[in-house]
Length: 399
Image 1 (cartoon, rainbow, N blue to C red):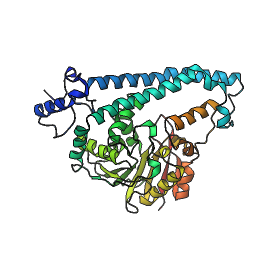
Image 2 (cartoon, one colour; image 1 turned 90 degrees about the vertical axis):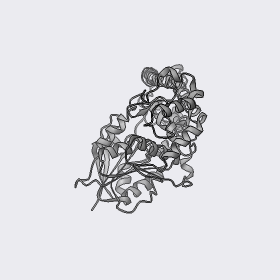
Image 3 (spheres, rainbow, N blue to C red; image 1 turned 30 degrees about the horizontal axis):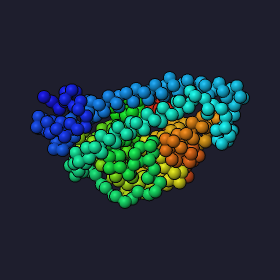
Image 4 (cartoon, rainbow, N blue to C red; image 1 turned 60 degrees about the vertical axis):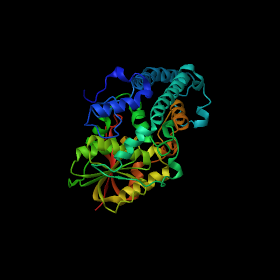
């Protein structure tokens, strides 16, 4: 029968999950004990365990695509027309508080875009949390069974989480450190964020392929900071199979899920619960240090400390290559010119999508921080492939 379950056999919702798991375990001896995979995989992606949940997820993903395309264009056009009529279209120096006073914030299309985007995301989180917490024992047993399995190692360091890491970024329930299934939620939640374009880790594989190597070509050890559910870490290990590859994240549930998924894929990447600013690795240990969308989720002070830590753990000639919003603009300060509507959109993401540190991130110049830490900086490094942006800032540790 193979491990791809007939879709109609799981239409009963989560109540049928335990029996579905038992049926799979009996029918397919190749599945590891405790593996929760009642509907099999499509390539790298384990399908969601019920047809109801998969249908909800597909609907919300399609809805998000519409919100971010057609509805977003309509809202932007309305805001731009209002600003032009009021002489605000070139008012890049307008303070945020004043920008909020203008009438595009009361426009029904502009407000509809903001509200449906947020509430659809909340519904997505609600559906996923109900699944994983509703079948707590099965999913926890699966993670526990993988904790000491290989290939690859898992190192847990509970209790290291500083206060700044405990916010519910992206309104994800419990955030990255406060829910035992944070990795599960993040993985399937970001599939929705990526509008269905990353089901096979497509974006992470492309970014891993673009990560630059040291001039001498030596790549023995790689560090992926803030690895979340481990997709870039795994892609780096697949690109450099002979290298020792580590993914670190402050979220214990994140690295547990990352390790479990890597084990399931047969990829020997290693994972450690650790702070990017205090990784506990030796001086000069890595040839490459990279990260993906980490820095806009930490304070400006922590970004500086992470940059310093990256310099410390790299060997001479090693490459530092952070990938984030607008690091593809040469790492210049994100306090760029924004019209009043863009400023309110930026703040709305900070306030209602719980991008807690976004306003601080807007003040950071990665290029300047890298120079301050001692890197030789190339503001026109190879493009990361993230968001279609151009050259990405990179640093090389001086000999």
